[in-house]
Image (cartoon, rainbow, N blue to C red; front, side, top):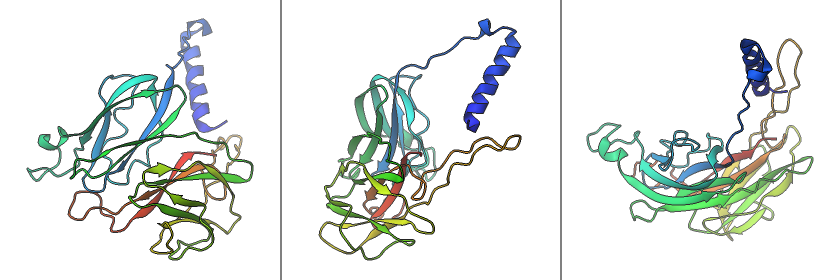
Length: 287
């Protein structure tokens, strides 16, 4: 039993004792929900807020604010009530406005996108906001994340290409990032603005690891490369000392990942500065 479950059970037990009778306890069943997260892949503008504007309850209107370019990966999937919802993207309060300061009303009132989407029960979605804001061409790529359960001894990985050029994506056994790729790509010729299906990859054995790398399709360089986290294995409870500690996804532990390949930042913009295209690994599902 992990710590979160202990806390929930402890709170329930305290409620029962305080009321004096279990008959006074009301069970609350959550509304049917989908799950959603947002990623900012717009390379030529600053921080952005992703908000649901049609409802106050049952939607995640606060977790996805002030996301910079290539950000959103530190937020988990959030519950959103089933049905059609209205979503707007605003410029974030962390941007420096014409006044020379942050929290400028002229900035935070700027709408960058406006859309509606119908969420289904139990389905995981990733909304990737991409394109050129300067050209007025930004839009959403909406991914339906059919999260697999990796086979024993494996983790699962897919690739999502946010560049304008097709990418060959490699998964090489390595303990360092790579400047030259070798062998056949694990995901060849990934088209722009598409995501592959998930595929199982054998876990690395200590002290080994994997580098996930990408190059423009048909070329060997330049290479964008990132080293996977090795992960943290499950730690069973120590009676009287600590509860179960959940495993953390990694190349030696398991889990489900997406490798996002991003373009470089646009020079002179307020986008977080990345001089070259790059890869970010997102944990989609813990072991």
